Every structure is written in C-alpha cells, then in structure tokens.
Amino acid sequence: MPIIDVHAHVTPERFKEAIRKEGSWYGLGPAVGEIQHGGFAKGLEERFAEMDRDGIQMQLLSPTIGFYQYGNELDVTKTVARECNDEVAEMVAAHPDRFAGVGTLPMQDVDAAVIELQRVMGDKGLKGAILDDHVLGRTYDEPEFRPFFAAADELSAVLFFHQGGDTCVVHRISRYKLGNAIGNLADRTITFASLVMGGVMDQYTNFKPLLAHAGGYTAFGVARMDKTAGALKPDRAENGEMRPPFGRAEGEYDLPRPPSEYLDRFYYDCCTYDEEALRFLIDKVGIERVMLGTDYPAPMFLEDPVNWINGLDSLTGAEKQQILSGNASALLGLS
Ligand SMILES: [Zn+2]
Image 1: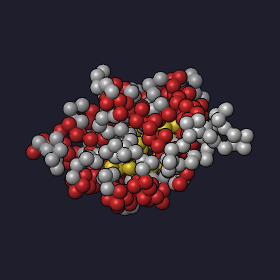
Image 2 (image 1 turned 90 degrees about the horizontal axis):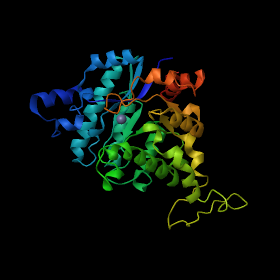
Image 3 (image 1 turned 90 degrees about the vertical axis):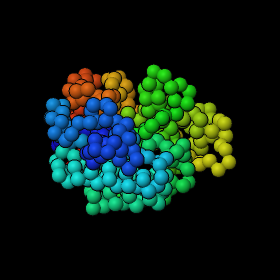
C-alpha cells in the first residue's frame, strides 16, 4: 500500500499564471495563493521530486486555504471554487497513482456548496472538501448547515477541517504568530465540540470528518467537555443520564453520550511535531484514526515525515504502517 499524505495543499497553476500575466485572478491577489512562501510557488515537477525525496507515494490534495473566499461575492467564490477544484481533479486524473483530492466549496451559500460538493464527488472524482472551521463566524452546529451535512453524509464525503485566515486567537493577541501556533489548534477544538455538542455527529454518521493539525487540543481537552456535558461524577445520574453542572440553555442539543465517546468518529493527521503528543493522540482516539499529514508545502511543513514516523520508539511497526498508509487508504477507499 502507498504511503499517503492527507494534508497537502496546492495553489492552482491557472492562478499562478494569471498572477504572472495580470497580477490578479478573479480579483484575488498573489497573497491568496501564498506564493510569497516559496513552497506554494513550486510546480508539479518539484512536487513530485519532494514527494520522492520524502518517500511519499500519494498526496490528498486540497486547495490552498486562501481560496475559501467565503466573504467574497457568491459568484466569485463559486467560480474560484470551480476553477480550483477542476485543477485538482485534472491533477488526480493525470496521476491517479500519485494524487487523490478534495475541493473547496462556497460555504456562505449552503445550496451552492451542496451543488459543488456533488459536482466534485461526481464525475470529477474527488473525495470531499476542505472547509474552514467556521463560515463568517458561524460554527457548524448552526441549523443552516444541516442540509450541507445531509448531502455530505449521503456522499460519504471526507470533510477536511482546516482554518483559513484569522483564527479565534487573533482577537486576543496578534503577535508572535500565535494565531497560527495556538489558533489553529483552538479552532479545530471548537469544530470538534460544535459538531459533537450540536448534535451533527448524532444526526449524520456517514460523512468522514478529518481534523487537520491532529485535531488541535481536542484529545487533550475533551475531558473538560465531558465535565461541562455532565458526564463525570458527581454530575452523572445513577441511570447514566448526563446532567450538565451549569444546566442546558434553551434549545441546546441534549447530547446522549459524553463528548469523549465521539473521538473515534473523527480522523486526525499526525502533524504534532512531537512524539509524546502523537502517542497521546493515538491512545485517546484509536490508532486506526490517525494518519500521515504534513501540511506540504507550507512553512509549517512536517519535515522528513516518513523517517520521523518510522523512527519513533513509542510506535509499533504495525502502528507506523497504519499511520503512513493503511488508515488513509481505508479512508480514501483505496484498499
Ligand atoms: Zn494546512
């Protein structure tokens, strides 16, 4: 089975060409494609060379996050999404042994997002979509997103949750790149919590949520969610009923099980940069849920990832195989 990197971005060549020739693409400037970071400017040959250097046979391609464009005019967002997704689909079709892909969606309009998801997962052959952790500040427990999750569920879509733009942390502090260092992980934890505690995970059981950056603080912090959900002693009743210590606000979903019991409904990349953190994640969510994800070609790329995984003393040989290959193969339907 191939070694698969599920966290690998691509800035479309059609974007780069338009930037070179005209300075913009559908009104978007060069920063959207992050080509100021050298990695995103690289072409296909360099991508292959670096995959080969690192021993990675396949990447699950996702459009660079600047192309989310949820706050843009809907027609622009739809066009940008279609163009990005067409290029990802062309890369997959030309090199099916090297690439699988997910698309980006115009999430500010659920109907349009569903149409594009159906399109990319139809004859375009993609596996699902990459999504920001929120849509213009709206989290995914909001009722307006239920038709989207219904469609994703129907399609068994991989939904790759990955921040775009400012994270929640920059509202507190914008220095030291903490919006990335802490914010990416905080935003991912909010996504887990809102999907679980809002009832989305109970209503839809067939879509495949993949959390970038190892799910952020989710695995470490989930016991506190259990506590506020009333799942721990002394709040939990003899009959098992969860009794939230602060009560439950009007209209809030009545969660039937502790949030920690949903950890193994999600998938996680291994992008922790730390052996103990990765081991902890595996022990909390289950080995079959963790897979290689490097954040290629971003500055935060997990350096020499395959050798890193293979060199970790705390993982068994079977666990390394699952992380590098088996789990992603199963997730993407390759095995
Ligand atoms: Zn990334």
